[in-house]
Amino acid sequence: MNGFGPSFGGGFDLMFTIGPIFIVIVFVLIIGGILYSVFTHFKNASAPRESSYARIVSKRMEVRSHTNHHHQHNGIGHMSNSSRTYYYITLEFDNGQRKEYLDVKNLYGLVVEGDAGYAATQGDWIVAFERM
Image (cartoon, rainbow, N blue to C red; front, top):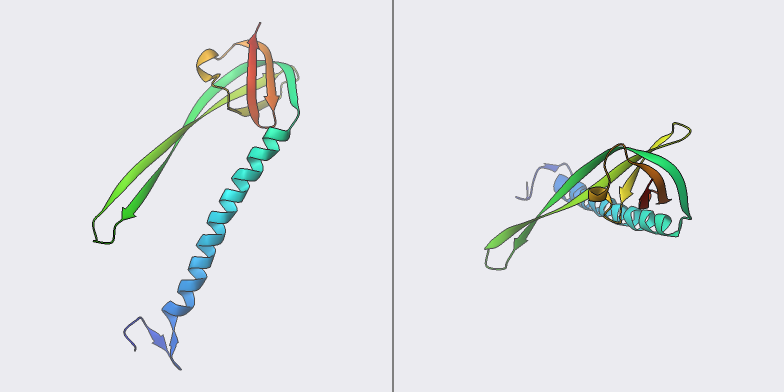
């Protein structure tokens, strides 16, 4: 054993075999998540804007939090927490179809469940609502 982890015949060191694979997998997952977010944003931003008569059947919010660990060279570090709240509005259309949209125009506080009117949507986003 060379002091760095278990060793299996012929100097094969498990840590130096699995470690790089694990790092590559984590890197690919992080880059994949970033690319998916960017792709989704541009897909919605370039989608046509459609207006339909609909009724608001529900609203919900989702809080996503993230903790960052910052380490300095002297061994002293600190943690920082960040969170972001996403607001969603579910519409029901005349044909009975329901779909949940991400509120990107701060409509969440301006509408209530049961409101009916014309909803402007763009991809997976709700961008306007005109109550009737």
